[in-house]
Image (cartoon, rainbow, N blue to C red; front, top):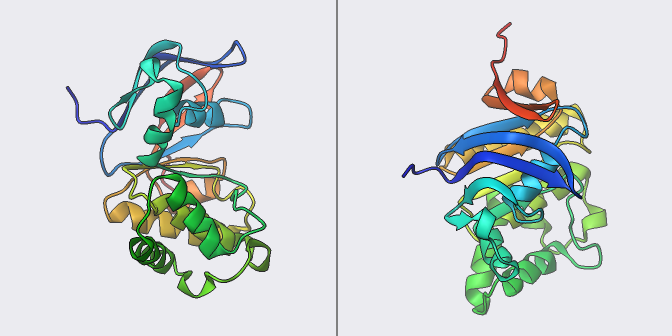
Length: 227
């Protein structure tokens, strides 16, 4: 048995009964940093959704942090997601709550009850992403890059084994995108496994790492050309 934290064998990814990707084989080991690239509509987000239980795996085998995706029941999905940190393109912060309240919402929803422990954890993750002084602010008071830093902090709250970042720089300018990627690289250097879907090829050239491409219904590794 491999020690992979994410593995798919001969998996077919469906979106509303339409095959998006077929014969997908994927193995991600602890500490890996993996890019998933491809044009819009080629299956990057569908693959991510399958990994965090939003799309069922009905064909092939898949395991994510010890959960069997093919046998995943509705009641298991919240527990799977506690072991994952998911970062979205549009941040998905609750607009009517402060950053502190956004963090508390997630901790309470995932079973935390000790107020001191919750506060310590919030302080820890906000410090980690350079946003410690922003806890009292509302999301609309932050720039896009700051909101994404907060979203990354939120993804770290339950000390996930894997972070799934779906186009995390999609709404950001190039300078801010680079800062967010540097943050993700720093988190990866501390031992976190990261899978990042992106179509920002400039970032790949600047921060090269193992890269898989979605194209024509298939997922395959691409070797980046060095300039």
